[in-house]
Image (cartoon, rainbow, N blue to C red):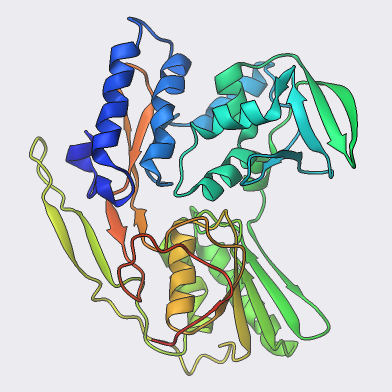
Length: 376
């Protein structure tokens, strides 16, 4: 299925190594498995696939989580961060987690990290922190209580906590408006956009129109567009909602692409590749176009369409990238589709295409901070 539906598996993974891993799983698998048992085995290839759009997972883990809580189930009791070096910390306090229910935190992180998808270890560590409650639940179950050994400033203490019965932070945040504007008195502004995945772009377009009107009216000279937690979505959201106020020269979303052409049912899809021929024009007469210094803040959660936005802002000299990079490729796969596996009900997620940044193909190049746009 991967060979038939992925435009170029070698973009992110080593196909022979993937074949060996799947053959080993098939050889070692028992005759029957529950869905969760199947996921625990199959998810071991996610890190090998090494792409945030290429994984084996649950087709609707958000809905399943809500249903679990509605039925009286519980989840890991606190929000955590996972450092790239494997350390586990509380998100809301400067305390390191030493162990959970008698199991060393390092062992837990190592086990769960092997099941997480994404481009790089840094990307996967960030994603694991956001969804720790999900991976812990699906790998170790859902106990009613958790005994955590915490360490802060060299002092250790043990706390016992009941399972959480409320929505995890990442799901709670998804219910809130994902964009905001804050303007300081010193002429600086921060425009935060946490997703481009909007069912209806109209409210965002109205928001940005008002935001840039406020920016003009209050004399802002320095603007930070924060996409550090933006996991992507639809390109049209930023193309229509941000670029009319930011672009100063013609631009395009990438340089070249490769993908699979649609084919009749039952027929194999044919490979296709080419150059991105669509150039978009700036709007020099737009009265709200921002003329001050522009920065794009990135982070380990910046992905997919948000990386395309950052690529455009950098490669055409519209902004300087700041924040924390080194987590995801500048060349991005996209146009994802889910294929539900018939026996387990798990989903194989694959991309439809691979898009190279405007500056040209650089398969191993990561999105990095502290980089001024080239203007090319």
